[in-house]
Image 1: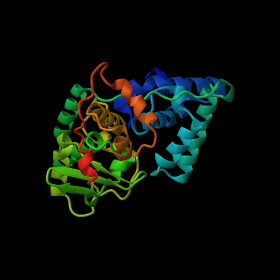
Image 2 (image 1 turned 30 degrees about the horizontal axis):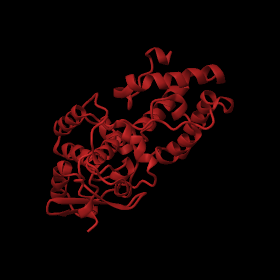
Image 3 (image 1 turned 90 degrees about the vertical axis):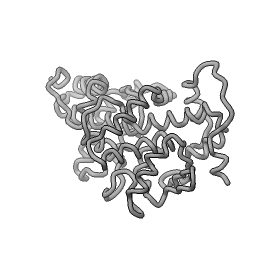
Image 4 (image 1 turned 135 degrees about the vertical axis):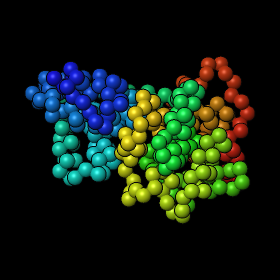
Length: 298
């Protein structure tokens, strides 16, 4: 059976030990309830769970991932490169899984909010810096550096960082700002410690080019995942969603005014920050604001 080791996902291979419990639980429940063959469910479920975890930033939990609205978002935003027929097939299979694992009678009301994506530790950030500098080519090292810079330095979501072009980056003296156009338009100051990667990229790239992965013909959420798959195998968890949480936490620790942080992060409600506050060190006083946001409003 696939769950016993014969299923070997290609794109999700390096994350299989992490994803396998959720995928297998969903597949087995669907197979037993719906009479479907596990073999036909594993590839679809694995691709969906990888996207929901890595791109969407959802907790690895069957009930929280396999929801109709998440499936619809995956089909429309996570499968841009698939044919219409393949998208229809995936949607059908995933909705079958949803019906099996969270039938109407089993869905709690109200549905509890999922836990926020945890931030990276200092050791994990150091490991990611080493990973970026160890890439096998100049182009890959640059792409890895700007991926970290836009994630940790500006808190951009996956589609936002994929949409940034060289003309959207404003370099003035010791300050760098990124103009975000997609989704939630805003101007975001880049934290000083993450600026070098962007400065190097701007110096190497031409006008109006993608900053991350030059040569793309458009924006697809899976392009970050594709970049990771084509590099050297790594056990590191490289996710913009976790970088964004880390960025938010950095500003909360620095004493950035919540309303300023909401505006710069493209968020609407303070509840979003309240969920991140749980990661703040207990009893640690917040230092004075040194965020640089004040300068960005000038």
